[in-house]
Structures are given as structure tokens and as C-alpha cells.
Picture 1 (cartoon, rainbow, N blue to C red):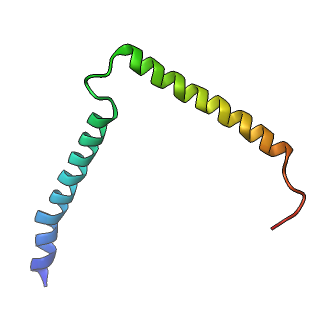
Picture 2 (tube, rainbow, N blue to C red):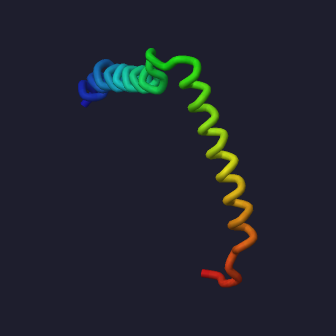
Length: 71
């Protein structure tokens, strides 16, 4: 009865932790490839800022055109 608990604590939990760390590292490395230069990073930032501004404008328009019916 105690052996499965010991196996889980000693083997499974560290394996899950190592898999999680490997996944977060590979995700972080893939977000900004090494070949990105400063102009590309700036352009990406500007695109995100433009998208946020458009989204804010869209939300304001949606507030004005809310239907009077309840679902």
C-alpha cells in the first residue's frame, strides 16, 4: 500500500516537474527567435499597439449599439 505512494513521490512528481520546466523553456525560446532584429521587434510592438487601439475603439462602438433586448 505504501510502495505506490513512494513511487509517485520519488519518480512521477519530479518527472512532471522536469517536463513542465522543459515546456516553459522551449515556449520562451520560441517567442523571440534569435534572428529577430530591433526593427522587427519594434514593428511587432507597434502592431500590437495598433490592435489594442482598434479593439478599444471597437468596444466603444459596441457599447453604443447594444440591443435593448435581453437574452
